[in-house]
Length: 350
Ligand code: NAD
Ligand code: UFG
Image (cartoon, rainbow, N blue to C red; front, side, top):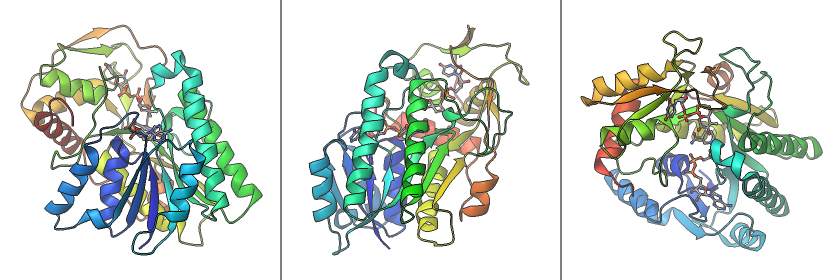
């Protein structure tokens, strides 16, 4: 088992992936600036380790800092050793992710996401570490595709956030073209939801959430009055948008499988994989299932369509299913119960 650097490892997807990597026997160094995460995440991970009878303290090195700080990054690559092992690969989560905010603050997004990635890849190269899993997004697919969309679908992101993801994917492809020692997998996540079933780690959005599941949870807990459903006349089965929700633990497992694939010399140097369930769930279906599974009431009303929404976004996940030793195992019931369990146990987040 090897030692992995996880950028953004205390964030939502990062924390669940760190847990999965640790449980699978990997050692991890984490760099996170805490710009969008809690300082309590690490304690929660250590606590969870104890529940699995594991001492994670011996397996984690944590560095508080920004990935644009190349001196810090360089010193991490040069000095961070766990059980004498140097960092052999990177899982790169660190970045900003709010689509709406990216329209208002494009510089903030380009600076953090692109400059951060450039610094990271530069320092990796200097330190002879050229294995990386990158967090990309289904938001790179444009409206003209038919869904489920495969990795060959047309990419043209409709928002600055998605543009930064596409630019980073292009940069990664250029790196593999320039030096065949790079081994890269870009994972295009669809809609990650849910939490670890213990409710010890989960999604903790700062301020008023933008995404459907955190909003449903906060309506259920009484923090938000009602859910505004964006549009009721979309060309779908019940008039509300279809999304491909994927349990965050399934997503975490996809990272572990991707790291294993990186070390398998038969793969292409540069791979793009859709990570979704391949099932479209409407907003109304999500609300109804949440109410049924958690025996609670979600007040909602219909409002105008949200700018930039697409009616249908569903993954064709065949490539991931065939190349990774992975498949999603958790259904919508589990997503709803785990999301609510986290919310109930942590009504104010961490
Ligand atoms: P998150 O905000 O919870 O986690 C990102 C982490 O990165 C945070 O802990 C934040 O503090 C840290 N960070 C940000 N910029 C940094 C920097 N310059 N230096 C060091 N740390 C920094 O987000 P998430 O939902 O866990 O998403 C992780 C990745 O997956 C992001 O790159 C995001 O764009 C991508 N993604 C997320 C979704 C989603 O719906 N959550 C969907 C598709 C892709
Ligand atoms: N929705 C509502 N009301 C709300 C919030 C959302 O009706 O208050 C609807 C949206 O219209 C959409 C669905 O719920 O139909 C899901 O919306 P989210 O905001 O949860 O997710 P998006 O599909 O818009 O986007 C998410 C992430 C992006 C990522 C994308 C990948 O926010 O970062 O998934 O598919 F790129």
